[in-house]
Amino acid sequence: TTTLLYKPEGPLNKFIDKVIGQMNGTTWNLLSKRELAVHFKAWRKDLSKKAVFVVPEKTINNGKGLFLFDPEFIGKGFNVIPLVIDISLPFGLHPHATHLSYIGRLQRLFMLPYTSFKVSALSGKSKKENQSREAFAKEVQTEIAQFLKIPSTNYSHLDKKAFMENKQ
Image (cartoon, rainbow, N blue to C red; front, side, top):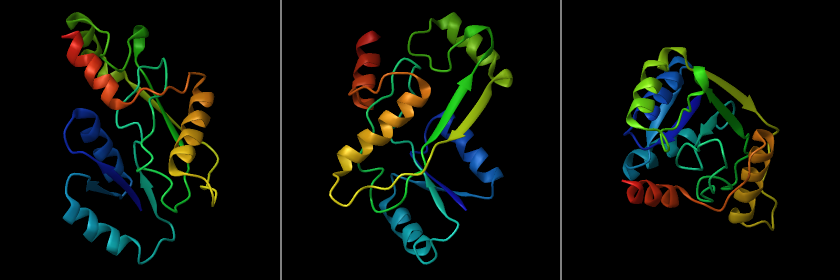
């Protein structure tokens, strides 16, 4: 069983929801504490063959650096298997529209049928007994950044949001 914790808005989440559904998985809405409580209660009854997929960056990065991971998303007593999702578009288009013009966004939209996704699973990790969640989150973030050959930054999804608001 694969479970995705997400906020329901946005086209990327709808796509991931569809992919998880194709794998006979379920999705959980992060915004509904009641729904989460019900799911976790049922889920914890049998932890064998179960995994939780979370996006600890809370956003997609621009390929130039990995955003800070939220320690609340990892390091809660579960093993972590870092997954790297590499999204490729033809003609050098970038999957994230942060720096694209209107024409660039339109081109990217038309290339969606030709978009490829490569998923890589890195070695599993466990939080050490005396390690803080923040240090563990940074360790996982750094390992993924090294795999991608990009910097592990201290910028968060909130910094990205502020940048996007100031850009407009």
